[in-house]
Length: 553
Image 1 (cartoon, rainbow, N blue to C red):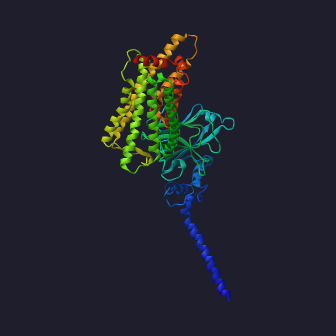
Image 2: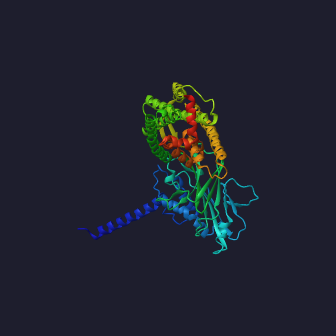
Image 3: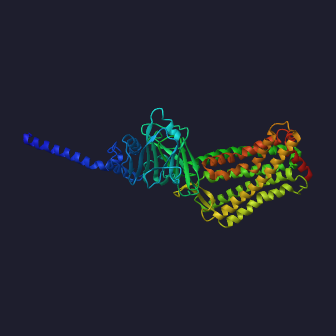
């Protein structure tokens, strides 16, 4: 039986144990500040410093328990706190902020310096413009004149450190993207929502020249994106230059400049899918082109002696084999065997050069048909073209292979992570061979084809103008003829020159270039099917081709 004394002792022990638990929870609270609840709504210097420690503690591989959503909301609300509590200047190692009253009846745009080591300060047009600055248009404040005469503007520079805060899914380590200098620029009028500005604000970020495989992108923090928020570029435009980037946005919030790989893993995979779909369609239509040519040779005896369709079919075959080599090279991933990878790289290189060569030979044939016209007889003409079209690339590949230039190749991002691995030229050791035998070879054929196509287009349009009379409208037949010839000389490949301009041009190049086989089939079908006589009457190039062929017989 339990005595009253024993019960009192047990009760005291329970009280001491409960008191110890409360004390331990109090002691553990500072360690859980990165859950974002302890300092919520508190913006005194101690709480700011305490919460700012999470910028480094909350890492992807760290053990610190963090609630990114709560922490990010804490800093987003800080600007409202600055405006509502009429704070003046805040100057800490991680935070520079200023709050200024602005009349809505101002006569000119507002310009503030955003020098990272200084508190934002207003500057005038007459002063030397700082490299980092923000310009707020006068129209922004004029739009608020009906509701108030003065507003309070908060400008914040926040150093978010190397952790996960304000990184979001867009800036995963795999993508190797980063916030430039880990710096955010916050603009706020407190509880006044500002969006869809008629005249955008401008934020200028200064920086060093980015690596060749990286680019800058202007973004803002969108709290509605994803579960914890993420970066978005909606409503913002990016103006790039060598050492500065100007961001123009139509609203107020937290902004940043992202350094992103031009070809991150997601982009590479999207480009591969686009290329594979386009190349698959091209292979089907290129096969149709060869079948159509074989049928025409069988049913039309004269067709056997014409050289132009033979050149078109040779280009179709080389392009078909290039697409097939592309599927094999990209679809099988990294090849473990060095010998097999060497062979795959050599085959891919060979058919790429064959395609370039036959596109150049198409331009040469076009030059003879339309530009030179007279004295164009060559004995065994197509045989000589075939020796160049298939033989010259073979000599180049043999020479390149003898130098052991083929092997494993990887496209890498800023953090040296491979986004695409294939068998091509060896990394670093065969760069000169790549530039000479691929880039240089392509530029030579590209320039020659461009000159010939330009001359042909000039001749087509000047001839049609002289014969049709002034009353005629646009020469759509000439336009379509030039577009058809463009597919033969490889204009879609010329888009590769524009790819350094940004990611959108890379997508355009991947789409149109992979569909070259479809364009060739359409031109071939229009030119030779169903009636050769009908085409002869409607196509100047086809008619000249007949004359040229007859001159060789």
